[in-house]
Image (cartoon, rainbow, N blue to C red; front, side, top):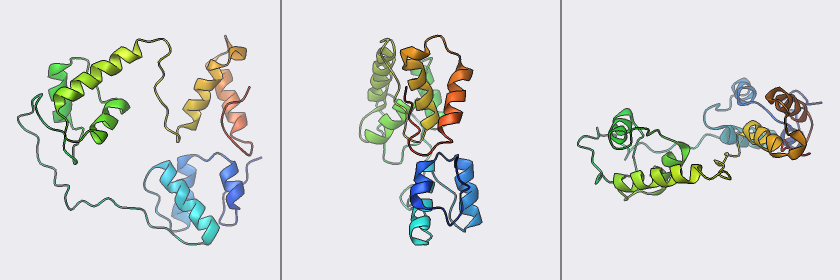
Length: 187
């Protein structure tokens, strides 16, 4: 069974079990570790603390060059900048061009990795993604911190689970996360 997370928990034992982000944040607060950031960042800080006893400071992104200026006069020729924000104003603009527009993870990542391209390129990328979604084999990628989502997807992909309910998948998840080792679905 899963141990209680304490400052005396071994790194291996810590890594062997699944922890909710809320549990990790509570541990951090109890031990003076920053509880901010993604689950992966928090996990790394806890691992460092368990291994060395040192409290690692979170990496803060510099805001010196990140003055956010209102984006007025948006057009298809607007250029994606390094400090681009997916704001309501930007969403509103894209909704005038793409009525069903929304900031998907794919589009948010497109903005981050395509500085210098234009909003016209974003529109093209959005429609390309919509076309990919029509393919029956299309699956959105699941980021590594979303272990539950990946487990549920893999559970239903297994032909042995054909016809099983979501409750059965959740029950299987609740069992595997109590055990040491990987939380990946195995048939």
